[in-house]
Image (spheres, helix red, strand yellow):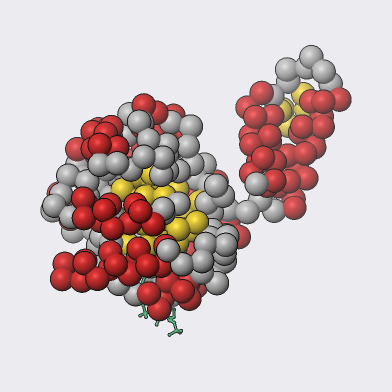
Length: 279
Ligand code: COA
Ligand code: MG
């Protein structure tokens, strides 16, 4: 499942869902949680189920973000959407295996799950658990909006937009937690959707650090994100050169390329990049 860009669409906006299919996003996240007001939840469940029941040959993965699994809304969300077979479930406020066990107990079955794994203080202490998930994971992601609200912080960001230390920690732990679980690390949203230069720099940093995709909130963000997480011809050529160099030198552990050492981790990274480019 290639997941470079995942675009949120509010679950009570079927007009936007239809439009969102044509934007080039790898996945949509049809939201039943924070983007939908409490009174609109029943209508949103019905709209999302109906949308899922429509044509599915458009090549866009359809995820649904349900409400938190330990709250009063999730069981109605699941009852509405599971019969319509979403491609994935986004699980907000996830707190490690307890949340995944609870989701499994509610019949999520074989639908891949993308936990948002840093939205409560307790969640931070569970980020190493996901390798033991009873459900298949589509990746792991994090959030920088709910956690500050949960602890009475006024913001997660410095004046220049960069994360403050507590949220750098949350991001880093998600990155390593995802890789420890062997699943895709997905960067969180960039809320300032008019600032496409800022988004490009943010997504480039994420790609540099080991994230392979990112969530979006606005159509304008999709192509910028796809570009950031698509290996360039230059990246591919360099990776291929490393693979070729080792193939030409069987038995060598460390070699030099253009005056720099390359060894096992470089070969591993090159192979991973080529696999991603081919997917
Ligand atoms: N999906 C699909 N289409 C979207 C969209 C989205 N997430 N966000 C905006 N659009 C469309 C609008 O329908 C509009 O289309 P039109 O030109 O054909 O009328 C166009 O993009 C421009 O929209 P714009 O005026 O720039 O934004 P807005 O003020 O209408 O909406 C938001 C801004 C933030 C409310 C909207 O982008 C949104 O709902 N994003 C997702 C929010 C969400 O799900 N949050 C939860 C996770 S953090
Ligand atoms: Mg939220």
